[in-house]
Amino acid sequence: MTHAPNIADALREAARAAPDRIAMRIPVCRAADGATRWRELSYRELDGGSERLAAGLAASGIGAGVRTVLMVRPGEPLFLLMFALFKAGAVPVLVDPGIDRGALKACLAEARPEAFIGIPLAQAASVLLGWGKATIRARVTVGARTWFWGGHTLDAVRARGRTAPPARPSADADALAAILFTSGSTGVPKGVEYTHANFIAQVALIRDAFGIAPGEVDLPTFPPFALFDPGLGMTSVIPDMDPTRPGSADPRRLVAAIEEHGCTTMFGSPALLDNLTRFAEAADLRLPRLRRVLSAGAPVHPDVVERTFRMLPADATVWTPYGATECLPVAVIEGREILRVRARTDTGGGICVGRPLPANTVRVIRIDDGEIAEWSDDLVLPPGTIGEITVDGPSATRGYFGRDEATRLAKIRDRGRLVHRMGDVGYFDEDGLLWYCGRKSHRVVTRRGPLYTESIEGIYNAHPAVRRTALVGVGPRDDRMPVLCVELADRMRTNEWPSIKAELRELGERHAVSRGIREFVLHWGFPVDIRHNAKIGRERLAFWASQRVFYKPWQPAATPEAIEG
Image (cartoon, rainbow, N blue to C red):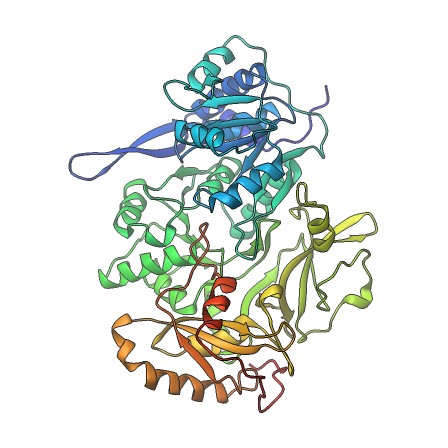
């Protein structure tokens, strides 16, 4: 049988090259003194354990092409199961834990799963709430026993795998490898279709973009990113934290893990990094062995970048890759360049996301909310003009599972290839740098033209009393009144809000893109996404703001079309 590419091959190769290297350190408990106790898995153990599980899963009806929901807490079983599913050719279905129950049920109904692997609580909920009721035919419980839902325990599957023949994944290189649901920060989560070629391309792009070498030690605070580490020959240190609340992760535990295990690399969402760097600054803390920090999921404020540099050695790097579940990474920028161009962000230019990776073709096209079936070079806009960002590259996924209409809106056919529409707006500057100006669906369409969230917010975020802002629109769809929601850096300054608001108005009047914005409302804490705690829930904020301001047709003093900087 022809062997098709499989992301699990990277684990096999790493196990052959360095079988005794630690692949993962996983927190298992806390000692009486509060210190975290760790379980170590070598590459040999991770590869061998997942091989036996793959055989057991296939023998239990969870083999090639079987869509399988995985609801297991971060730990040894989760990572063994992920690689076992890949080796068996099954299709993991991953949804963010903690999302709204209604949205979760809708996601699982859409994915039409045929198997369910989960902890007892997840198994019980799936039966009682009817998740995948019409399609699930196999169950594996990660726990001591099964109850009323039936199926097998993980231990039983593992035992079966010791005598079962090896699993045989599909030989089709274009076969579905996984369904990864988006965070749903701009609507209902959508199931992104991944092939093994997409995963393999992501590993290669990450390795080359950041110069990662085998033997390094990584702290991936977003657990799915730990799955890339075996392909990079790294050791993953899974942090002792709640992955659904990265913004609330205890910085002391993060620092302890970095120092104890000599982490050279870490990934953290902007919210996690903001919290960690504030702690490090207050404690005058340095992390001399940490050489590389990556942050993604939302724009990273330059102040956070500055604080990150202060806790690292002088030659360390801070990277903010740009991308999405559908295509990652697209472009990268190093922290020093972020600081070099921050004046443009502070004056309405948007967020610089750097240069596209060499493997990607990135183009900016005219904004259109409808379907674009076929590519035409006439779509492309010149530098300096805001439009929708598109990507053609090896990690760009092919569509959304069970969502043909969403796929048509997100993809453009181009001579046998698919160009992905990011749903983001931005532009290229005269130096070839890509600038992000916000989500296309979040632009505020006024009678004088569109306003773009990140362009506007960058101006007000530069105010020292402001933590962050969010531009929303109130009123008719094509005649919005812009409203700026404001979250203060220090809640103790709430009594100063009238004077701060006056200063924000004055600040906005200095720039053509924000001139005329008159409505400012104070908010105690923006709603954010579950995955990274960093993407602002603007739809919810827009509804909230509509209850607090009276709509008036907007009459700005100038047309807000120019990009300043």
